[in-house]
Image (cartoon, rainbow over all chains, first blue to last red; front, side, top):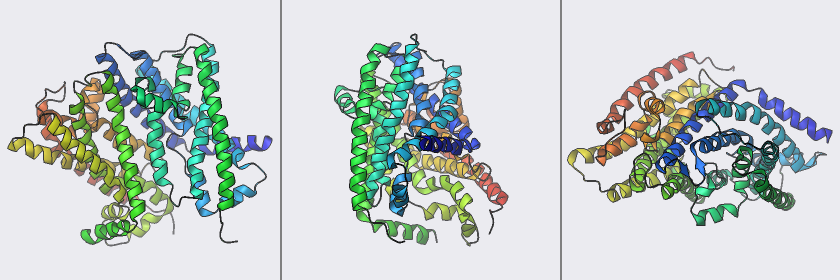
Length: 264
Length: 261
């Protein structure tokens, strides 16, 4: 365990080095938040002040929490593992005394902790100043929200890992990453709340792990879904964590058997 | 020379057919999911920013088409900071070809044509469905608007690239105006509150790319700050933007000192 802790701490420090990049990220993130909030506000105002359970204040909370989660979830996908597979560096990772998934998960948690503090909290504060936020009434929402957030980061890590691990079989994973990002943005409920979807799209979204990454932590943290009703949602997140971990282990196992690393 | 540079890039990419097709399909999917956002909202309410679904589709199609052309020609300038850091820029500087032209042609990626295809199809179809009554003047605007928009996006990308000479680690700043500009351009401008609308019209003229021309083409009344005749302002705005972008780019190149041998 101490090993993984050290890895996570190192990842945290590595990311905290790039201060200007962090400021730039927060700025851009906030501008996008304002654009998104404008679109949702216009729709809600046209609908007469409330749209499928969302008021202006709730929509604002939804948008700014979404912007805050974007960086720690790494919604745009990572490419490190796939590149290491292509370059053969993955052989070194497999030789390490730490487990492969454990190593990358520890790095992800360290990184996510920094991204949450450095890139997540500031847009949330800016949003609170510019448009206001609807905060939960039940203190239990914060506790469950924190738990849901951890699970969301875990689920996002695992699906991203699955995409990266396809590099064992595919020569080029860039196209897959692009498609994955687009589908994820929509079905996770990042762009618009999934309850606004028409039924067929909602059914598709609910059958995927994507809502567990963004919609669930936002609903739980904002208190839009009260604690008691949030429990089954957290259960779904746990279920996806188990399924995706199994899938990632299987893929890694199969990939390692098929991999051929050249050179010495 | 321009033809040789771009031609060689296009030929080299056309060689890998499967990879190209996969990328193209991916792009089509990406653009469709982006439009789904607006579409889902318009299944819930009848109008967004005073526009119906077909009218919004005109704005989206035109914006996507303009961004697609701008992105394919100038999108790679966004990655300038990587070339500054790795020292690759020196190689480009010593060649007797303008750096901007080299960067633009060097990484020309044909897969980005997907956005252009979807944008064009959507723009034309939605215009017809929205009851566009072409006159000589509006027909000219319909053809001119995507090109002026592409020029504007090109200028934005160039400004974004030039700024990286000063803000090497801060390239994400510029994304707020390039990709953020695209987001605003593909959205009915009336949804934005006045300060934001003013900013994205007078400072970053994103609403002049697709929203304002659509108002003019479909003879719709505009909201405050964006009268219907503003549809004609895209080209003048693009010219001003390119003047500024050119000055900034030259200043950036002059400031560049290299990172060693």
